[in-house]
Image (cartoon, rainbow over all chains, first blue to last red; front, side, top):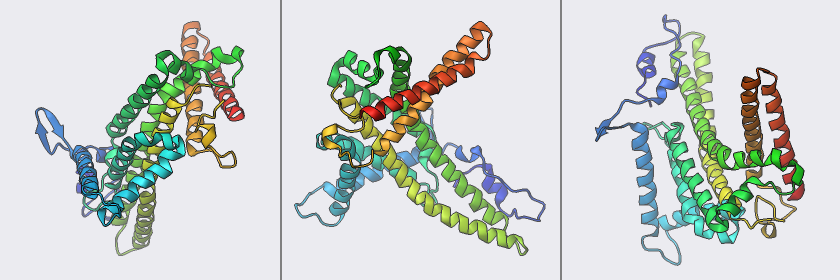
Amino acid sequence: MSDGSVMTTASGCHIFSGCGYPAPSISDFYFKPIFTVGGIAITKPVVLAVLAAVIILTFFYVAFRKPKLVPRGTQNLGELGVLFVRDQILRQQLGRKGDKYLPFIVAIFFFVWIMNLFSLIPLIQFPATSKIAFPAGLALVVWVTYITIGIRAKGPIGYFKRMAVPEGAPWWILPLLAPVELFSNILVRPFTLAIRLFANMLSGHLLLLVFGLASWYLFSLSIGLLFSVTSFLLTIILTGLEVLITALQAFIFATLTSFYIADALETSH
Amino acid sequence: MNGRGAPKSERDPSQPRPPSEGWAYLSYMIGGMALYGFVGWLAARWTGWPVLFPIGMLVGLASAIALIIFRVTRS
């Protein structure tokens, strides 16, 4: 829950009490610094991102500390997660030769997923990924990774030739198409990767805020009660939808990351 | 002559294309319109003919569609 103005104005504010609907806004995505370290203000999203990293590190450390041939308990769960990422995300794009990128994709998938899931954990209820800085930072990491892999696989000239020349196109149309191919492969990719995740989590959080606040605001012993109940039902349904979206967005982010790596590695035409 | 989405040897042609293909098409559409739209906008500023801006966007859209067609028919 944000410490924006909405929550304070919303308390005790109901319909027919001469109080307008305290609509959630972008200010609910800005937080007061919790504390400051060396001039850098630490806010809730930063804490959540660190918390996500700690949760993942602890989980996988506990799961694979003493790996056994027949997995039990936490190791079972950890293997389930890693195998899901390997079989459903990585090998779909890269085949078996992509297994050396498994740690990277597993880290990306679980980091994004846990940061998304914070949207639904009671008392936290804020997806760190709805701040553009986190998706943008992750997209930057992915961007540097796939370009480095591409250059190492084919050399700088070979790689950029492959990024710029669309296969199957006749030579006379290349001056028109090559800039688009290069632009979309080098610049649009990281941009859309970040925006997709950010916009989905921002809008999801905003939707939950709108209906959550509305069910409180419309609550009164009048016809408003009907709207309040409807709003509350919608909040529950949308929370269910958000459960799906948190996982789906992490899945898409990891899938596209492995696709970009596959595309960078692929032998030339 | 490999398909872009995955190496041809590992992709079963009877299977649907991976979802990443769709995102690649989207990035062509955005990229084409943004790039040639920008070029058209610059040209419009320079020449003083505002019609060059929408023409640039249309050229970008057409190039994006051409790219997608080449990609689909060759892989």
